[in-house]
Length: 291
Image 1 (cartoon, rainbow, N blue to C red):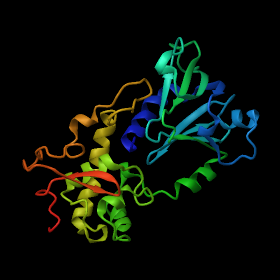
Image 2: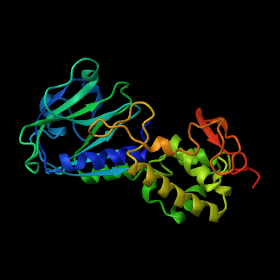
Image 3: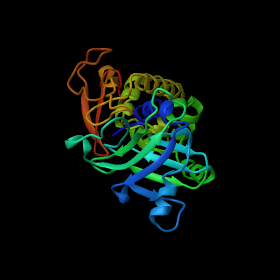
Image 4: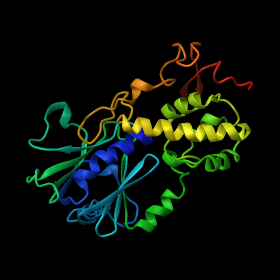
């Protein structure tokens, strides 16, 4: 499932194209992927307005794993990728065959700010497994009320913020990191990577992690997420950026997906366990639960 680096890289790859773009029209091939959080009724006119038809995109934003598109009329559209979602730029002839499947929402767009692209192009939301979706909000105020239920954004998490969040729970530290109300943006991949880098066992009680280690963990979360974003995110299977390119961050994973392989720091074979149904990988030496 895409986590913060994948969503942030997608936002950055989309932004030069879509900011300033005018949404000429939209085709909604599967209405169930669109949620109208601030509207009554689901007429075609209401749906088209919520999806920004006739509007200009004036900016993008992100909180954790959620990305938002801002329209000139003050409305926002939040994109959640779920497990297999993508948002891509299409130029030229529409795709055929397998590539044309699962395209749920297709905008026809035009970018006055891109003289090299004088012809209309398409912005496409695609999601084979349909765990993701689009949610339309009437204003920034409404969106903020929803985003304020999330924890601080992991890309900029400060040590004291993380210490305060973890002090309130006796769950295993990895379970706490996966809770989006505690920390927004970290999922299974980067929880394993950050805990390994900080030398913290995934089963360590969150509130019992020493202050110095929590500050180190916050630093490692920022570093690892920043590096993964720069690498284009981690493509394990489905994730692609705005132009269909996979990410390269999987090549620098030190823990996730490496059960049974030697730790890159000490050489001890990495172990695996399941926590909340999630595969979890750690080094029994570098992440000793007794320390």
